[in-house]
Length: 301
View 1 (cartoon, rainbow, N blue to C red):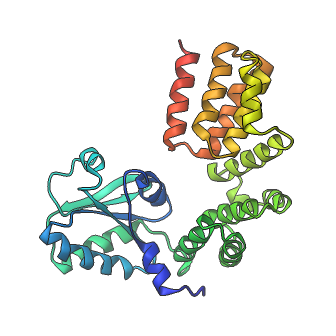
View 2 (view 1 turned 135 degrees about the vertical axis):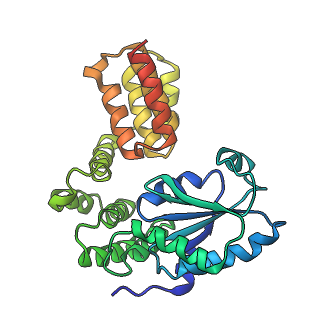
């Protein structure tokens, strides 16, 4: 059984989010475990009672359910999008979608029933593996690649087909520049994981790493392109370099520019690379959604 530090665990299970992090911490995160979202404000009296009581029920699930808190005063656009008319307002998300919720104060027994009902969406995970994955993800985000890898490996030792742990270990290997080890993981992947979208995205990431070897610096590529705006190869290389550097939207725009000017260039290379970028980002990422809309408008114009 994996043992985790309680203070670190509480910080992971209950966290504050805002409009910038809502997509990752709620929509995407709810694909791994149910997420309870508490919309509140500092001036709201009932919120001060409901919040801690709800947090206690969530913590009692030992990581099977997580909770985020949204201050509506600081996130008015998000509150408007969620059509929050009064607070406290609570929503439960599973697989990226709201599945339950309520407004106003609730008795402790009602909160307990709310959380117990949400637990029906949780698959038996063999103990505290979801909690361990959350902790390892925090290590990964902090750049503690070796520690994250050790935790993910322990999780896979208990459940070799746990997809989030496999993805996490791959990212830890890539972060530590252990490219060969990451590639070996894909060669030895468990059969049950082979066709999962998140696993296919890992191969696209390896392909991108191989493609970007030997590319020039971003500023040099931009300067070269400025002097030769119709050189699609330079623009293509710039897109690869930008994506690797985390400038994903700019990278996609460069590829869309190539596609707009010459759809057939280099055997449809721009469109094919766009699909690889979309795979890496994930189908629900706002940049993916925008890029797909722009590509479709060119295809069907």
